[in-house]
Length: 320
Image (cartoon, rainbow, N blue to C red; front, side, top):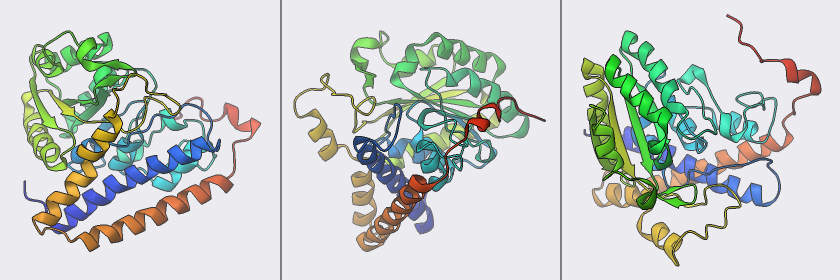
């Protein structure tokens, strides 16, 4: 799939926005500015953007506790996201969702949640609607979710109902603090998914172009009425499972190595500049613009209003 200059520029901007959003949260949390658990997505940007660049507002995604990257890639407002994480009533979910429960149904982002594997059944439900309207439902999961019964049941139901659902497993090699090689008893999560009777493939999660090409083919396959599919994306996370995680489970020098050798942004920049598809100066300009966006988002979030006690009973039930 050949991408235009505008498409390449947009993809880089999306990935850079996710990276700087997460890097800034890392700094702000260390200063005590943000309450609650936060799980950062830095390092996995090519996965979210490679997938979501194929999607429109009528396609659905379901996220995880590590969901900021999915939100941004799907089109959620960055400034409203920052306000949400800071707990503002002007946030995307009025300050009631926070980091792990951001949602924006208007852009097809059906929500993040803090339960491993909980997104798969929701994705199947969305897949029933997607089958009717010719769209697709994407379930983002980590490697830990591939061991959950909810995921098994959802995958089986998607096959039985022949739904256009794609199960995206972002394999960053650690389920919280447990290595994937230890916790996954099957040969791989790809072969396990195939055992349910669906198309199952693997791609390089630090290479935007490999993700984009592979998921694009799966989306076409699913929308053609062939049922669900699965993709395992081999990637890395640059921070701990949660902010404050000492990461003692990592090997000596591991973080330094993956940051130096397996950074999806560096990989993208090298490929497009060497192929003369984009100039380094173009990418530098995007870096400056995204930095300004994140600075503005944080400044606004710090002064934005907070919910009042009277707001606690609002938005408890949906009204149709």
